[in-house]
Image (cartoon, rainbow, N blue to C red; front, side, top):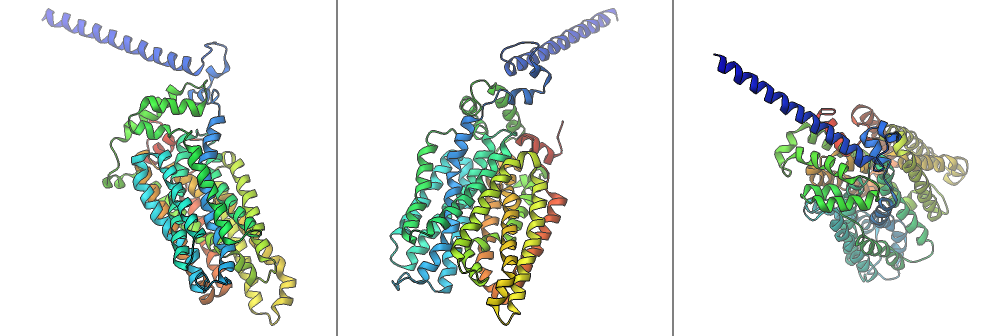
Length: 512
C-alpha cells in the first residue's frame, strides 16, 4: 500500500499549496481595495484604520449629487402645486361670473379630490414602467402630464375641462411621488440619504406654499400658468443628469453604472468598490420580480410596513386639511383665511426643512414618534375648539376668547406633520424594498397613499356633517395615536445603513 500513501501525501501537499495561493490572493484583493480607497497609498493615512465604507465615503464629493437631487425634486414641487391649487382656485371658481365654470359644492368637492384618482392611476402605471424604462426617463415622462394638465385648465371653458386638467396633473403627481424618492435613494449614499430623501416632502410643501402665496395676487388661470413652469424646467434639467447606478447594474450595465457613480461621487472616490458592492447585492437577488417572491420575509415585511405608513399618513387628515385649508379657517371664523393658508404653508416649509437637516442624526423612528404625539395632541385640541364653538350662543364673541386654541392647534399639527409623518413615509418607502421588487412595492404604496387621500378628501365634508367638526378631528386624533403605537412596534430604524444592509436586515442575513 505504499503507493497509496505517497499519493495521499502528494494530494495533501497540493491542497496545502492551493490554500496558500488562495490566501495570498485574498490578501492581494484586500490590498487592492485599500489601494483604491487610499489613492495616495501612504501607510500613515488615518483612513487605513477606518472601515472600507468610511474610507470610501471620506473621498466622496456631494456637489453633483446635490445638483441631481435639485433637478429631480422639481417633480415634488409640481405636485405640491397641484395639491394646493384647489385651495385658492375653488373659492374663485365658485363665484365665477361664467356659469359654465361656476362650481357648486359637489363639483368643488370633485375638483379637489379627482387629483387623487389620477394620482392612484399614475402610481400604478409608473410602478409598472419604472423597472422597464428606468428612473430618469420615467421622471421625464411624468413631467409631461403636469404641463398638459395645467394647459387644459388654462384653456378650460367648462367644468369637465377643469376635471380633465386636474386628472392629468393628478396622474403626473402619482408618478412623481413614486419615482422621485426612488431616484434619490438609489443615487444617494447613506450619510446624506435621509436629508436628500426628505427634500421630496420639503419641495411638496414649498409648492403648496407657493400656490397659496401666488393665489393672493393672480387669478386661477394665471395660477395654472405658474404651475406649468417647474415641470418644464425638470424636463430640461434631467437631460443632463445620470440614471441611477443601481438600476443600471440591475440591467447588467456595469460601465454605465461606474460612469454614473463617478458623476455622483466625484473624481476622487473609488467607485469600482461601491459598484462591486451593489452588483453583489443584485446578484444575490436573482431574476426579476415574480408574485411568488411575496412569500419571502424580505419582501412582505417591508411591503406591509410601507403600506401601513401610507395609510396612517393619510388618516392623520393632512390632505383634507390642505385641500380645504381656507374653508377650515372660515369655519374657525378667521377673517383672513387666505392669509392663514399661506402661514400654514410657511410653517410646513420651515419645519420640513428642519426635519431634513436632522434626519440623518435623529433617525426616522424617533422623528415619527415625536411627530405622531404632536399630531395626537393638536387634533384633539382642534376638536375641542370646534366643540366649544358649537355650544356657544355667540360664536364671534367666543372666537375672540378661544381663537388662540384654533391657531395654536393648527400650528402644532402642521409642525408635527412636517417633522415626521410628512417626509418619512416617502423616505422609508424608497429605502426598505429590494431592488427587484422596488417598482411593484412602491406602486402598491403609492396606490394606497393616493387611494386613502381620495377617501379622506372626498368624505371630509360628509364627515364634518355626520360627525361634526369636533368629531372629525377627534377621529383623526385616534388614528394619529395608532400611528405612534405602530411606529414603536414595527418600523425599523434605517439611518446610517446602505440599502443593501437594510435589505439584509429584513431577510435576516445581516452580517452573514
